[in-house]
Length: 483
Image 1 (tube, one colour):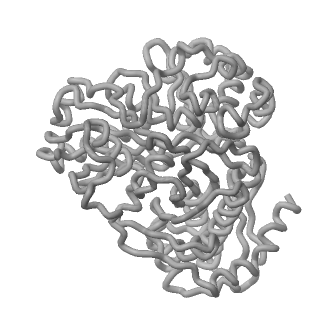
Image 2 (cartoon, rainbow, N blue to C red):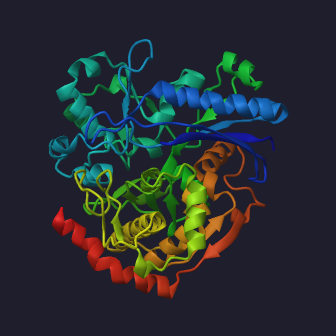
Image 3 (spheres, helix red, strand yellow):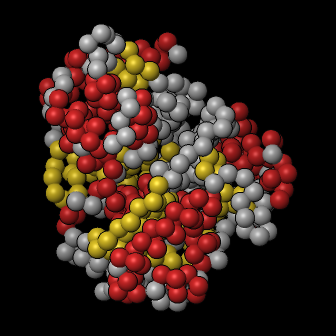
């Protein structure tokens, strides 16, 4: 079978991969993105920056692998979830997109929930500030001229689809997290749209994650040496695509992603709405499955922050130095990773992070390790929140860029008390998942028969590490009482 192309629009950058019929990554290209925080709680990116980054990665792949690009049979899309791109009649962005970790719409959440008697039972979770519905109501209240001039409201990856194909389309999985959709029926809900001041005509058509949502524009096909009208498949949000990339395609299987955020994803064959603890339930990209989620808003973001704080420009090298230092957990301070508020289990956009237990012996490497530990403990909170719903977690995979760190992987495994599988493709999981959906969309298998998960290693919980983290738990939780 011909190769497929997966494009993942992340928060810190775009990653595009060429994948062969055996799920091996032939080539990949990356382009960075930056985030703007013009006011407290605000977090934005300009959609045109997303497109420029996608162009850069595809230009690079076309230059490096012209033969493979010419043979690409389909394109799949993955993207950061919950962002709101507002476009005018000429399909230009009217303002920067409000991202998944934007916390300005806290006041609008209660009003959105009041629109329906059983809001969570319809959409899958409580209204939380980072989600599109309350952010659209915020636009209606604070920037009504923008919403009035908006012709299209698109999620991040769907903006890329529009640029690639000219089609305004979203998939059931990504759209289920907008809080504007009936998650079981897979339809936009008129009452929710009215509550946000949104017209149905402003929203995209909805398709399955493995359905074809348009064809590549002729000019772009020529630019990248690809076949004209190459199919662009529905795709999904990065959480769902990351799960597909990790082989999480049956109930009871889960993944933990260490990206800009930390996401705990659990596949389920039942729709179990989340009614508290900052959890949320959406559609999976795999037909017939749903996804229960917990989210730590600052994971890799916290690591990048502390790296800048200690003056380190090479983050992977910094983590290697921490691992080589073999610092005892008892000697590090406690870090709470609530740098941009927190979702699971606290659902509080105003929560703040902090170090405690600093001494004259604390070094920059101690601070960095404390951040890794704090994110791991926060993911332990996600694990416990999911267990409290009665969820059955049978196996877990670790994905995302942070999976490359053996120390961080061990901390996470010890914090959740479960074995983690780490695949060779873990750092490109969402892009791989998008490519797999593209292959399925043109009649191929979702997983290559020779794949076997590409499991390179397994990380087991370490009893001593788990005990050391547990000894810090009281101080970790004390931060909530002091905020």
